[in-house]
Image 1 (cartoon, rainbow, N blue to C red):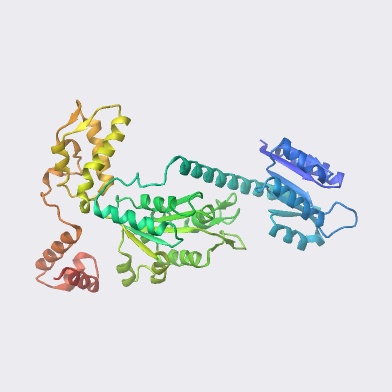
Image 2: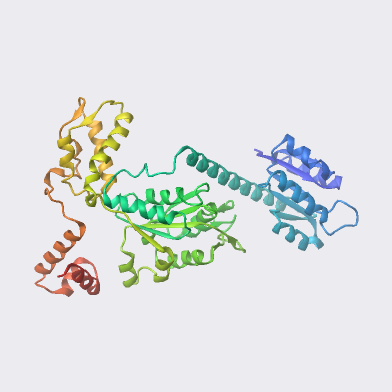
Length: 456
């Protein structure tokens, strides 16, 4: 089966053109040939070419490549994303390398071997596909940015805690500073990262999100830095990594605390140099991106315990933004409930559905360890199970993992819970700090720091 692609070959040697066409017509859906380079613009008026093979010299006896440089420039004026493969003689390799610096994608030497030529074109087609995908993503991002006003509509809440987050985002977004977002699971760390991007000077560029917790050790470099065809067993084609895709935009590295020390070192190298090298490649590529990272893990303690690189922490946290837990902003619960109720009453075709105000007040008494994500799921469950026009019982929000009715009316903060837990553990171990630390799964030094923090 032929590969769907439009190929244009421009060379003043008719034999070269016919030979190339005969071979490539067996592999690709459309192959056009032309001896006169001045007719190139006319071809682009008829077709969108995926790959152009361009000779470097069209006049007999010339080998300086000046004509090739000129027509390379003209092609890139017509289509800045054009994939141009240069056709050159053995003694003109230096000229071809110079042309690649000016926008050419690759080159082939005359006389070529058919399989080498085919492999070069297939790699170029994959690059063309990747470029189109980046353009599509950027256009999608631009459309979303145009259609969606840059405000804090996604941040539901009016509490002082969430207002401080909004104020900090407004201050740092216009800079290019690296941001570290801290917060428990379910608090909305990616929402903050997207807000930073939307308010930044890069808002018209792409936003790439990477869940580092879901990237295995073996695939880390391939996923983030990309790879070239043949770099490893399953590398059947060139693939750009997430950093390349995020070029000129924002990259969000979620769960950065989950990275092993060796992977932290590799990431640090890229963050310092702003250069990446695809797996299997021989040259580096410059990348320009805004970095936002996030974690729910205590990175400072991990540095002390030698589980996280201090130099990497310095690199990623020029500014820290801490997202409050839901129990730290319980006054926002009614607004959040109304927001989710509106979404799910539409989704499940239950217009006019409401929640009894007394029931909403009871929701404030729950500790919400899963934060906003847990509240969202609880509201969705209540809507699904609702009968009639009003949800009157707090039991509607209860799932096997949610016990709202058993929570004390005054929910404790995380620090208060930690202090009580340490005191209980010390009591159970008759004040033996070493044994308590062992039971808690932390070092004695870490336990002492926590005891000092809580005044124990």
